[in-house]
Image (cartoon, rainbow over the protein chains, first blue to last red):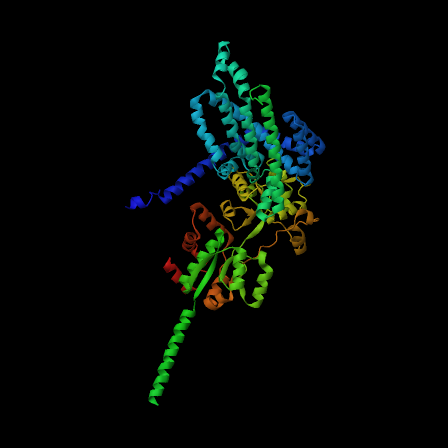
Length: 295
Length: 337
């Protein structure tokens, strides 16, 4: 009866040895390859530092002007442009400019990394059902595993700072763009594809001129989600030494500074809304242009 | 008369007997010890429990504690009786007042040696550069401690955002004129980030320079060495500047860290219950820093609780603790293990 009332437990010492063994082999791995991996990410680090310095050192009216122009290019909506400019002026007025620029820098670079890595993976998944089966559980894990768990190995491997922060953000923010690229390409109308084939299109031509253009709106929805999730990671990234709006939030948490936390939290929300609206409008626009939506 | 004499004598005898047994029991009664929520204090509470129970016949109960709540409770309600590792900086005024009134006693003003906050480096760094024992010497060599984001500067690891020591480290950064000397602050983000940066540097044989405190498992595990920060620039500089936000501290001066006052405090009740013997034990009970850090490492590696660690300590560090107790008590404790 004891078997039924008590779940079989691994021997305590054996369990400890197992844990120690895993820790030990990871430490060896990081000692062996850590420097090489760090070196691999060096260009990314320089780019991040360059972008942050550029954003912080350029006179603020120019930066805000550029954001306004980008918002216009994306949305063609003057209300959104005015809103963007107002938001950034308010953020600056409350003394959050430098942190905000640091956050913009890391969010833009991580979104870029996610797009560059995620879209090809999505395309591979859409082409091969076997690849899809293999990659889907990995994506599930990336989205659900508590971020504190992978922060430990990332710190051991890369230390603290921008690159490990970027990696932590990307692990969480990558899945939507992969999933929606896959979905978008798989949803392209079969008859359209047959027509392309009838004209003698090679698989590459099919992909570039038919499937990707037709699935762009869906891919854009994925990019939009990726940006939103990257912004959600700002505070976590700050916990491993990334400068930005997350740092004052951490200060606020440990000292119960309500106003400080609220102001910086709202600044993140403002960034999120701007990014969201602009990319969404852009997605809608390319859809309209291709005459898919009946708006 | 004879009967009366008998009664008187026997009652005297009974009285004497009860008095005698009363004395024997009064050697120690019921006491409570605060079991603080960090590893070193946890270990000390468990060790005190075993020694006072086995060696001095007390009846000890451990109650959970944290610095300020425990202090308030000791002051107001006289319970728990002992706080083995009490970081007094936060409550020094109130504590001194209670001591003056005789409500509380600061029995031991250094329960652990070599304890405190400050700047630390890894031993491998000192092996290669033995001259880097002082802060002045280290600050001259930013090239040895490259900042992860800008290798042309030295990286100075400070406290995570929101901790009190974050402010004092930022003021130290200005007080020591570190920017002009080629240094930049490394943001550590969280306790895990700070610990991780040390662990990573130690495992890879890199140099590390920054803030930490002892007694901690990390100091013991990597045998980190405290940096000599030189002269203490006075209370006014510290309390009126170093601990305040940057904008309220215009002219920080370079200084060593403020001394962390860590005491073993007891209530007056403990003095009465445990008597001279018990007080003497607490007075003598000083853990050498390396021994304590070593125990913390052992606890971390074996994922042990304070109670397991206390037994391990009593078994392996006999030369340390037998000096704290009388010969008779030591024998009883050894027998009980």
